[in-house]
Image 1: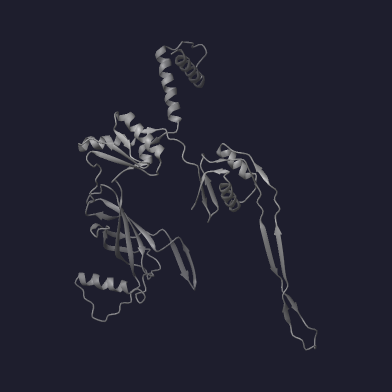
Image 2 (image 1 turned 60 degrees about the vertical axis):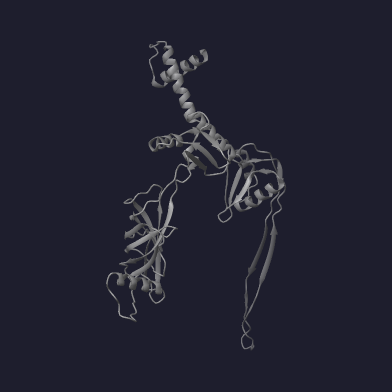
Length: 396
């Protein structure tokens, strides 16, 4: 108790110095004040510690979005639509639409339209979506249209994998790109064949979402980890008591939930905000071979090793020489090839790298090599093969 009061007294003194309290005010703080200051200091220290919420690491099984897809026509384009001679399905769609509206084109009619484009319409139906709710849709050109800018999507049905219509889409297409062409020259910013319609679809059919199964809710971790699954179960049991949660494997945790709907919603709201301290993730190095990017987490360590990395450079230069014969000699002007080949290999000595226990030590050790990101990829792979790099390398 004395140590707690001392900590509270020091905290109050620090607050007084920060607030520039006059030295003449020398009232000794009461025990209640010291305890309140100590609790505040401890709460700040706890808040500064790294803690994860369950909602940031796991999802409730069954609560997910559903992909929708549909086919439609975009009209009103300024001569940038499909070339109907090369996209017969666009003409077929137009004729079918006109027949449904009571207009029948004469047999053998060849439509040459430039302001219509066939498109695919996609959307994501969120969980618990109800009829009347609006969704954002993405419109993508299916044929050879040059641009969808300024077009309007006609009424299109969006279906799920089961073939049922879940939403209807229609509206003006917003395209983020821009372009212009004249005299054989063309300039373009971003893509013109994909656009979006904010709130362009209306939900017509809900998707049943099953959250509980016989009073049990299953939490699915986004990444498989036995340690995190056990910590999630322990945190839930510490919050709600008893054997509320049981970790089934490295990805799923079964939780007993109330049977009543209202109580279950309140329980899940509290469950998602349960926080706990997580262990360090597994050591991993992410390598992007296309861009040369290398990212490693703080769990990566390096054992003592020696590295020598040299590059072999082959340079080929071709400087042709024009041979001009003297006048009236009857000779011909010829081009004589003059090729120079230079092979250069850097002779780098072995560089000793000390074992690093922290990420900063690993980075400092690798920087001593003076290698480019492309060279570091090869060096890290060789270190992993030699057992000096204690991490998993993932190439994306």
